[in-house]
Amino acid sequence: MRDVLLIFAIALGAALGIGLAGAVLLRALRRSSITVHLNVLLTTTVVAVAVGVMAVAEAMFLSAHDLEVVLITVAAAAVVSIAVGGHFGRRLARAAVWRDQARERERQLEKGRRDLVAWVSHDLRTPLAGLRAMAEALEDRVVRDPDTVDEYHRRIRLETDRMTRLVDDLFELSRINAGALRLSLTAVPLGEVVSDALASTIPLADARRIKLIASESGWPTVAASEPELARVVANLLLNAVRYTPADGTVRIEAGREDDHAWLSVADTCGGIPPADLPRVFDIAFRGEPARSPGPGDGGASGGLGLAIVHGLVEAHGGRVEVRNTPDGCQFMVRLATA
Image 1 (cartoon, rainbow, N blue to C red):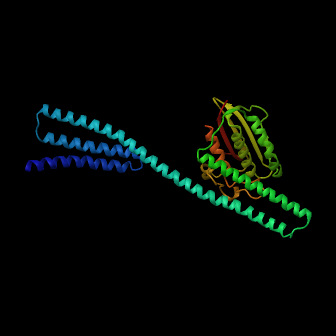
Image 2 (cartoon, rainbow, N blue to C red):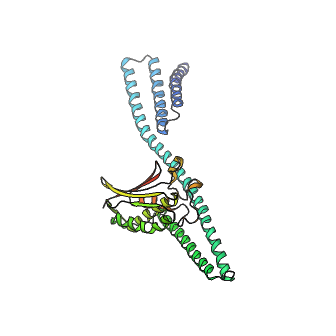
Image 3 (cartoon, helix red, strand yellow):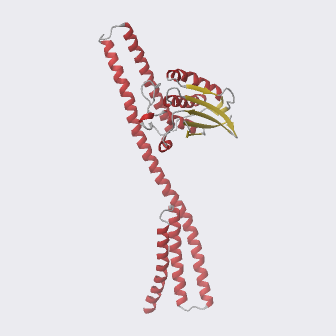
């Protein structure tokens, strides 16, 4: 019994020494990744067992041959244990990180949905209240002057168009998020798409005294679905015009680089706060109040325009980025060439 207790004490002392060293190392690496923590913990456990066995074997005064056999056996078991444990430890770490990221994405999506409902409710409530008031005024014949009646009819049509655009944006966004968007890729001349988008944006730009500048040549042909690509370009142009102060400039350019084409829309909005740059493409994000569009902005869509751009570009297998420039910001879209 005394020998058993002695063996236990020797093994316990050796293992405790390794365990304390491992604890100190883990504390020093507390800011490291979960994979590093798992590897250190596994190595500490295996080494503690190996050192305990070696200490007991040494204390038992084994022969040189027997001690060598014990050491080789322990070393082989330690190598296998560390290799197998390290492999599955990395898998567990990746799974844990993936679950954390999935939960974070779900929280962000839920927050985006709540923000979307709040923004859309606001954007619908205001025009609906105006439409009801104008309709009641016309119905009760409170307004009789022909010019005023015509103005009411015009405003009803404008507000109806605004809500139609908002509903269209919601439908497009729901298709993107549900994965129901089916693209038919063809060779699309980017210059023609940009020309059409400029034609529809010019009235709003002229009303705000904003100069639209487009390159006369160098427009590549891209592999895209023309309706969705047209929506991307139109949304980027409208976004630039809405947030650019009067007498500002919006410039649109394109070109070819290696195996992809790029499209740039740059404005003179004064820039986006650096903290807001990662959230520009979030659903219902409008940033600081100074950047929130007001009446007469051409039909703001509840902060959905850039979210739709991001979803459509990714559906094409491309990417869209935003960065600040000295006098504004620049949106850059990259797509495969045809």
